[in-house]
Length: 342
Ligand SMILES: [Cu+2]
Image (cartoon, rainbow, N blue to C red; front, side):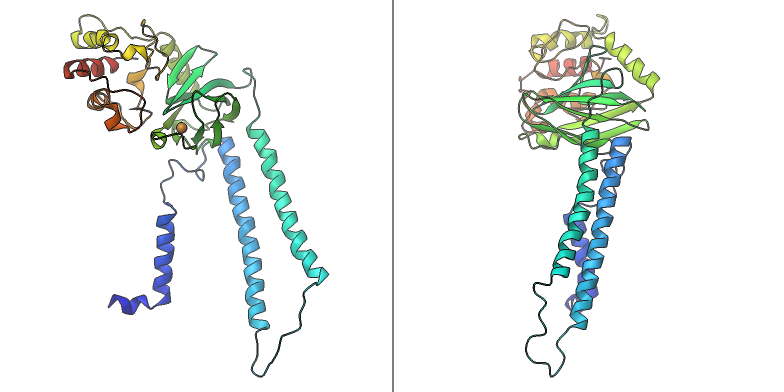
């Protein structure tokens, strides 16, 4: 029955288009789409993509029309023998189809190069908020030199302000990509790259590492929290005066505070406002305020924090956070303590 319909070209066409869309990963989810820009850099880049697309569409339309016309008009008629008149070496035609594409490509190239330099422009601290971004296997470090604040994986920025990202890597190559705010820029060990972004509207913008960097690459995610300037200032204020040592009265959280050092977490992690200043793993100062943990892979709630501390590899294959075989009681205490950090 189906095979009878399958013979229809229309049905085959539909199946082909559907398969094409599925295989190309196309969808209507626009939370992480270059075509749904939320800032000036991303807007210009999206307009470059759409204008290139339409230029190519026009070129295709002209080419295919000429092809179809040629095939119909100059087809072999009944009774016609031998080759039709040959036009090889026709200077006028050769020139036309060499110069025209060259002009189109040159125009597209000039626009692209111009904008590439504009996007990599280095704005001084007087014109943009500077953030030092360091890529790690497999998480992001964000440092704000102006306020001496450090955080991880969740980048806080004020809306409507230029943010100058100063990018480097602690280990291998990574690539910073938050599609709704701007295109990719690589983070290369021993080198500094620059890019600027700006969010026009408050909101959460998702991104991820775009350069294969190891087993945990796909789980190396970025969240940008673009806030109204007053809320951003409040966040900086809070980060500068963190509440990190729980009152002794709250026994479980306080036990977790002590366990954090006892089982070895503090060897790698810094928590502002405490004596814990490990520099290998993410800074956890504002942890309770983060939406997600483990480089934004899992929700930030007690159960998920417990699972993460209990066996990081099981949650995020490839993570460099070791399994310290922390006993269950201490896992619960530490996960509870982490939930109090603000
Ligand atoms: Cu990476």
